[in-house]
Image (cartoon, rainbow, N blue to C red; front, top):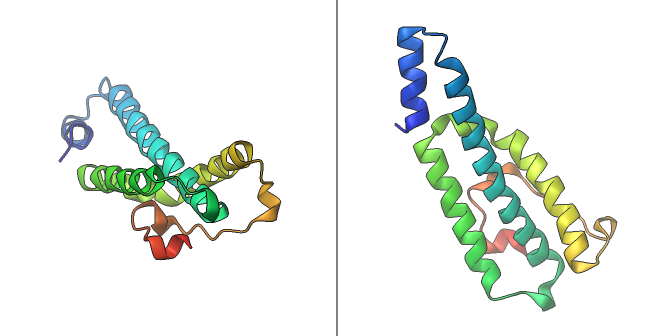
Length: 128
């Protein structure tokens, strides 16, 4: 159980309304960090998929590291897993814009399937 979940448990047991803003802020912070890793992961998946000839040797490491960080978040904060779909959609939208800027390839020229499961279980076979 991580610190946020401990605070949630304490809050629910004590019902002290002064704790609620603190818990809410910690939850937002955890969700922001999770989304940041999702954005990095989605960006490298985009670039990996649309630039097979320009693949950097660092992308697989970044993809695996982001996946590992997300797995850690989900183990430490199981409640975050319920927010994967919503945050993954936002991360993919951001990654598509960033990939277009970084590669010069219009997102309308490429179609990628980005299921939310890729946030924590991408394989290189999925990436094309």
